[in-house]
Amino acid sequence: MKKIKFFVLIIIFTLCLGMGGNNYNIVSSIPEPDRYFTVTIVDQSNNSYKVQKISVDGLTFLPAKMGRADVGIDFKTIKKVNFYLQDDKVLAKIVFYDKSNKEFYIDPEVTFFGQTEWGKIRLKCSDIKEIVFK
Image (tube, rainbow, N blue to C red; front, side, top):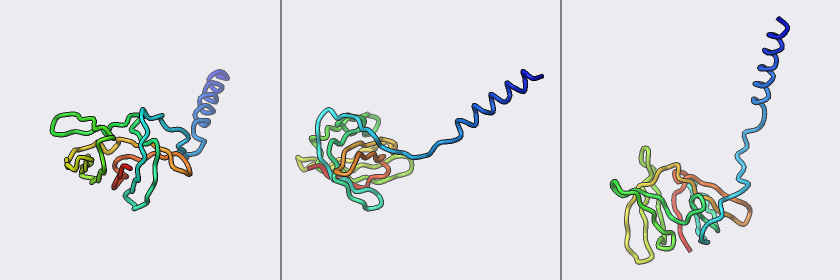
């Protein structure tokens, strides 16, 4: 009987250890991008951020869908992107440096990483209103 009580106490103790802690969501590191781009990001709350080393998980391509095709849009071709949340996806209206326009769909969970003058930043696609490339 003592062994069972001891075993139950160990299990309870172990479970209680996992219940503490904080829920801080600190961005302490960002993926190193394959190339460096500087952008201005405006979020859905109209906050503006000047961001360097912008990437999607270290890659400088925007993952998108056009019809049934998966597309990787090179950042170097993009001048500006406006994002519009639509149900379970994000409509991206892209203006390219060659002055052409195209619409794509992006998963709202796609996450952008970068460096501001005051710290590292992480924003999901669904939280962004506009990205302007410099």
